[in-house]
Amino acid sequence: MKGFTIKRERQKRNSYFSFANERREQTRLCGFTLIEALVAVTILTLSVVGPLFTASRAIVAAQIARDQLTASYLAQEGIEYVRAMRDNEYLAAYAAGGSTVSQDAWISFLTGGNAASIASCRVTTCTLDPSRSMGTGAGFSLTPCSPTSNSCAPLHLTLLANGAYGYTQQGGVATSFTRTVQVLDVPATDALYHDKRLVSTVSWTFHGSPYSVTITDHLTPWQ
Image (cartoon, rainbow, N blue to C red):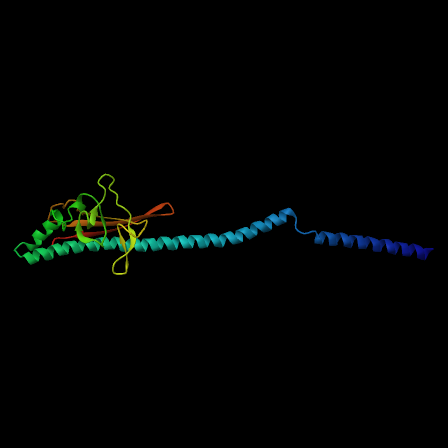
């Protein structure tokens, strides 16, 4: 009888341990709870979004740097073009001869009535199209902007006759770049024979934000 009782006790203990092990196994295999799943999804999302945001900002920064470099070259081209017009006026005056070549060329360049003069670009801003004939006015390289809004049309990326691409005022593909060129009097020295300030500005928008690059130089009479 005693042996039977001990056997029954052993069976009960084995049954209890088996039940406990089964419960632990079920708990182990029941999977994640809802909160654990949400935490896991959140961590995974943050680990993916972080690098993507960094890569996106790097791409935007590279595009802005690219546009700034292009705008710098376009603004510098405006400076060099006006200086070339001044030099051509001097060469024309020198070929004509006389004792006041430098003075005559400077006055003709600033106030002359022909296309070689920059007079129109002193009273308002002008836009530059190097693909046209050198000069100021309709059909020439320097064209005064709208006198009412003082705004210039955007530049176009165009395939030129020499097979290269350039920025012009018409044809090709319109860009976001706008270039203005203007000759201004230097404050306190606005006499005709004194230096003039040449300002070339290229502006554009990127993702709704305005940007601009301005280069300033001084034009002086010849000696």
